[in-house]
Length: 150
Image (cartoon, rainbow, N blue to C red; front, side, top):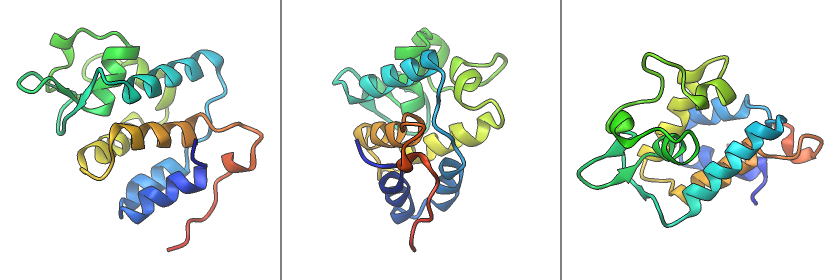
């Protein structure tokens, strides 16, 4: 697992400063059930089951998923016909919003969409970032926000 500092530096070096700012403000998740959901998401992103696509949760033509589409499919168990080409949110709150983006769901979702759609981050890279930012040990020094040098 990479450290919080390494994850933020990776995002910074790819020049995604707004995403870096959003992730810097995220505190590690302490709720065991929510941590379990994040672990499921990380495992799904690292599996060979999902192919990465851009600009939508699920692309019917290619069978590819955005990282958020992987969450919707693998963790939230949303049927594909409800997520294809769409975006989380819509008319009802998704499990992702309820658990990890209560204060500003669009900001957290946009940060992950930007990482996914950039072409600079693979599912494995995104899984590393999720672990470092959301699953960092709460009492660990790595869990504390740090400045990333320019």
